[in-house]
Length: 326
Ligand code: ACO
Picture 1 (spheres, rainbow, N blue to C red):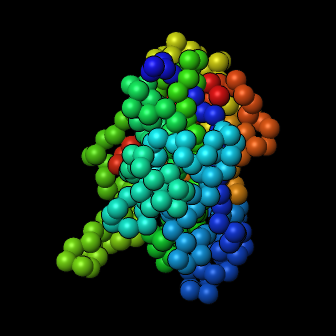
Picture 2 (cartoon, protein in one colour):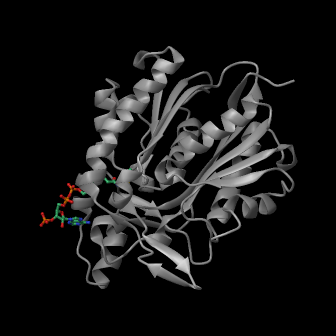
């Protein structure tokens, strides 16, 4: 029997052990002649530290460890899973997908597995796809994972971008349910903004053509981000017949504390209702929302039954939000 709803039954996350404070990164960059400072990074972004994966550690390596923790929290084993979606922009290979590689590492062989590429909005896209597949009976127990090794695509000679990002993974188990977990979602993309945040390279003839490192017009991203995040949150609330007063926790993409403060202000949400991990993780792109969610749950802030607004914005330009009862 197809159940009407989907609900998160477990969360997990994983950060690679190599942690660089701003002071560590400032020193490493200074050795290469790139000048920045802890003060600049903290004041403009709120970031104080980030984690970087060691060479040879891939997206699926981080993702599988987060997935195992989410399975444990849900009381399930890998064999119970009948759908795996990985949101990432830094997969292990051109193909196959990070989801297929992760599936094999997890031992969940046989179930459908694929990647979703929507950059920093990837997790809200993936969660919405998994919710739709559960509602139509295509899946009953899904793993939805955001995993990134953004350090691999950073230009460490460009101080305007390399101080912003980190590596990590977060995961949720989403199960079919008779009671509503996911209440509504709202997704968007506008490809006319491709150039403001991109890695404009491709593999062709066995070599990388173009520039295979991240480029960003930070101010253009900033201006767009706050407005679209408010719009997506309001549209999601309207679809669910709720108001911002119903939100217990905002779990936003962790790009920059100023974007998060701006969004909370527009939604008239006090900052103590916002889960903040950007200070310790930096921007982990598609991993940042499930990482923040897991930190919120395991710290005891987010409790079962709470109403959460998840929202993301990123390259594409893509943006979206998911409202859910935990
Ligand atoms: N250290 C020291 N100085 C720096 C650094 C740095 N790391 N980076 C830039 N500067 C300098 C610039 O060169 C510039 O100097 P100038 O005035 O002499 O030319 C000065 O700082 C100001 O630069 P701006 O780009 O104007 O700084 P701004 O206040 O806009 O902050 C930032 C830059 C943090 C990127 C901001 O635009 C921002 O937050 N944008 C949002 C983008 C974002 O968060 N992207 C993440 C990925 S997208 C996503 O996840 C949604």
